[in-house]
Amino acid sequence: MFTMLPVEIAQMIAGLCSTRDQAALVLTCRQLFRVCNEVLYRNDCEKLGSFSVFSAIVRCHDDSVALGTLRAAVHGGAKLWQCRGMDGFLCPLPPEPHFIAYSPLHLAAKRGRNLVVSFLLDNNVPADGPPNMTSTPLFEAIINRREKTAILLLERGASLRTGKSNLGVLHAAVQGCLPNLVTHLVRNCGIDVNRPTMPGCTPLDLAMSHRIGPMVETLIMLGVDMYGRLLRCCELGDHRVGRWLIQSAGWELSGRLSLDQIFRLIDVTVAERVTPSMRDDRNVFCDALLGLLGQAASRCGRDARVGYEIDGFLGGHLSRLVGIQRPSIDRGLALVFLGHGARIQDGILLDLRSVLLSGDFFPSRHRALRKNPSLLQSFDFIQNECLKDSSHPPPGSARYFGNQVAQTVQDLVDELSRRNLPLSLKGLIKYEVSLIEMSKE
Image (tube, rainbow, N blue to C red; front, side, top):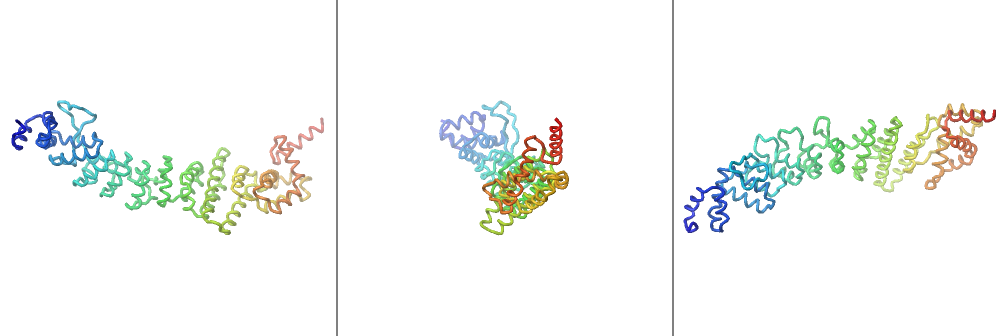
């Protein structure tokens, strides 16, 4: 009999029923659904603060069903800028439910409901959400790593403010590892990628501190100042950080730095004085820089001028690292250069030959080693590392050097090494003292 009543009267009667009874009438048949559904949503809007909007966004995972519910709620008089809901999933509702006010746009952005976000914006909901909120929908999307939702909000007019949070939009996007959003912010929103997002912290610094490798490559493509940051790593001795930056940047970095800039980075790293505990990190970092130099050289193709310049640069550093007037040679770093194709230059060979073949070396070995502390170390490195490398044939001067002085000095070096004595004046004195003691016995 109820279904035979006029629609207006049926809706008046349904309006006098409880929410539970209205829901039961809606589920009875299609005819009652058409009659009572509008009453149910109007009652929800007036008495429950649009709880249906909250349920559609939070509890309904089917976008088509959620959009249908939102359309029905709008038809029933719901205001989409605010709804009320409850923490937890309570069904059926308690007699006196404790509702909390929510922003539908914040709820949808937090969950990445892009179709729902578009529907809300199409229905004149502000892209920044209601005023006096602790955060904006954009910030909710970013901190929950809803990258597509954040880009959608920006395209629909959302501002770059984050609400009451001190964290900037770009800062949050980098920290959340959202490369597409970072690209959109820099290219379409006019944000400077080298500008600090917080006092003293640029996006690159943030990616480094949190070890967000994928963001480094994105920032490089957006024009971040990698040379300045790597130079700081070289000057401050942050070798592990610098190596991580190079590894994270990949092939893209070699195209962003000039040869002169890479030369400068290597020069600063080699010239830095480090403690013995830091040498391994320094050597590994220098190896990464030399690998970067090789990538940059390969980008230049078969340019003979570039190849000659790089060969001279590597050879010059190798010769300085094993120079005879150094307190001691830097064997570990010299091996790194040697592994990247560095060749010993004629100058160091001529210096060695002039000392060892002067006729005064064996009668006055102490004086020669005082003037040239790393003489024996340099000879040992060149003889055993440089001249025996079949992949890099030695020049004529090197072969001449080996033929003239190799055997006479090699015996002394071998004897010191056999006795575990350093290849220095101190080791030579200990060796001579041991010979004197043996002769007395």
